[in-house]
View (tube, rainbow, N blue to C red):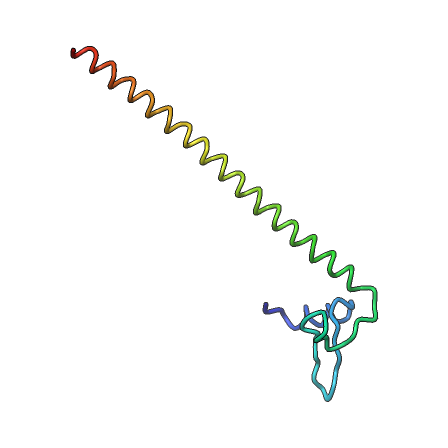
Length: 100
């Protein structure tokens, strides 16, 4: 993920990112767990995780909604196709009976 430098600095200022600065270089915690650059000492992490979870849930809900909507459209199209085929079969049967 590529973020604008100002966005990253804003996240650092808000405490959303764990970081440390050494010799003019800024190191940002890449993952949470045993390979953390800076140990977590603040309570801002759960808020960050919750906001990320909510954003993920919103995306998942939208995706599921889209899939269900498409599924309904496919079912409607299937029903229309079956009705058309049944009508065509009935027409052909009637034509065969009338020819005999």
